[in-house]
Length: 403
Image 1 (cartoon, rainbow, N blue to C red):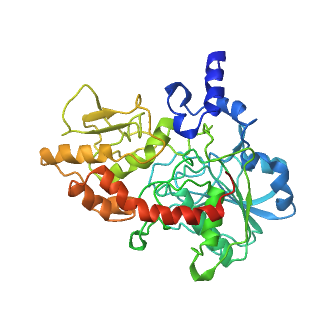
Image 2: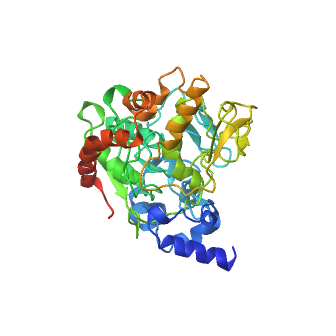
């Protein structure tokens, strides 16, 4: 890393979250940025003295993926060197190594490096079974979240807490910074639209770390049957919600950099439409396009590849918009692109929404789809969210660990 690039990163770390993405030079997810961040913000996994004593002499189940690291060392590998008794690894969507495509079913297996059993929580079963937890004294959860309701790691967290509560097994959550924790926005999920891409009455962007969210699951009694999980959250050191945090490892295959992460809450709605947001390219969540969108200077062609085996509009030229050089707005969701593409495809008499209910599951309501179809202006749509957001923010305050 050259001196100029180091200075750019150091300056970025002093900016507020909403200003941090002005310079594309600071957006790549690179291991080398971790050396700058660790001195300022220390994820809980690196605060070894706070949780290692809680694991000694116990059999441990690990809920982890490729983001569960201490520097360049995986948490599982580190704990094995400390002679911790790890019985099993539970893996979420995208798998233990984080290479599986979105939605791809993952089977149980044996990790070839550690020879530990890998139990999938994204396939036939999304919740650990009593048999899976037999002999386990404590569950350790360490996964990098991005703070968006339809990003399924918080759903996995819910099911882990539920299963642990049923079996009287304590859960330790190693907290990590949320790269989108500086704002709260979007429609609050309505109960009839509950699914694995949205289990709780929270807005699309909820502005909490995964440790804070775990406390909210318990405190708001979202576990069934009045269950309460024996929960310990190991906090991040030196962290505020307004802090800019460069993720050292991409959290999933189709979020390759911080521009993609910043765009993700707004662009993921397109997953419920006929429009591509770059799966099958190296610009996932950084481009938007469709074959019937008016031809301009920019186009792309999705192709099958790692992390996107069957991309939408595969091998088809898509005309659209390149967002790589556009500063994301880290103060609110952006609905302009949804409205624009809907209007343009309507002119072409081309379907915009998919026939299934997935758009509504992502939105957590059927109102957003109706509002777009009815030509409601973005300002009016946003105003309709205000009462739910106000109520959520009051609830959220009870569980915050950081300023």
